[in-house]
Image (cartoon, rainbow over all chains, first blue to last red; front, side, top):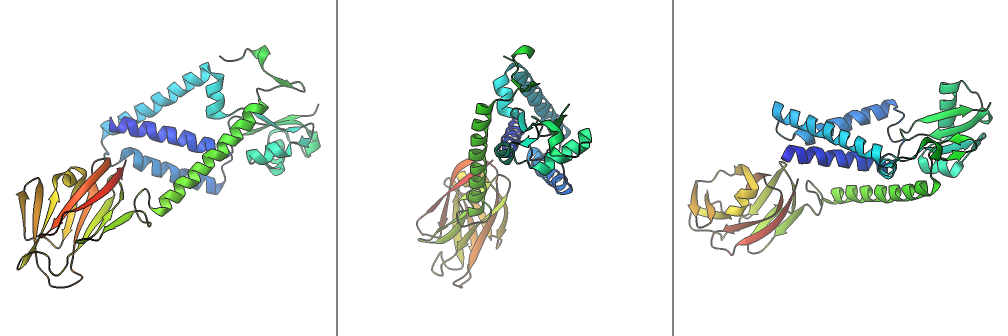
Length: 147
Length: 171
């Protein structure tokens, strides 16, 4: 029982923490973000296992995590509200070449991020060439160029 | 229920399921969440979740001084440190009786100095130590928490009044 509760607790805590810190917290992985991700994974792993390194505990933890993930996916598929709460919604951050400053600031995105996505995804050179930039649920920025 | 494709909002021809009101609420909740996480970290720094920090330990000062952990984390090592007064105990030995609840909540890892003898008492285990006539003589019980929740340790040193110490074990 202990392992199942521990896995559920950690799963929920990670969802809450990453939701509180926004979509962009680990969306674009810099070298340091990658190191942070490894540290978080290592810390989580130790708390998950405790002092029990048995195969049974390992199987139980993996099964619990995957089951919880599946359960969350099913609920998200059925409920827009739950999906919005757990993953957020897409947000337009540039419209007709104009950056929507307030939205960008609150989402932790700047013009440089939008331009980087525009260069990478569409080969665009200037902000004015962008019709829409959307901050997706995943934290990635998608670009729709002007026609 | 999920919206049908023709129910998805449109902005200037772009079909995107954004919701300005939800987004505003979401930012507000996120900032509250970040504030709570900051408080959580500050509480951790202050020692409210064990480890180091001013709130992590308490000191029971009368009749015997005992430094004990107020907040403990499961499986993390902590110490109960008894400063033995020169007048405690009988000739040659000093006894420390510890209640049964303590042993339900903590696993004793190490006792320094080693007790001369251990025996069962009424609802307690009694340790006998060789007496050292020094003002700073101390006995340390290094333990690991084995049970979650609130617990009370009762230490009776020699013939002094029992010292009751409350600790909370976090999962």
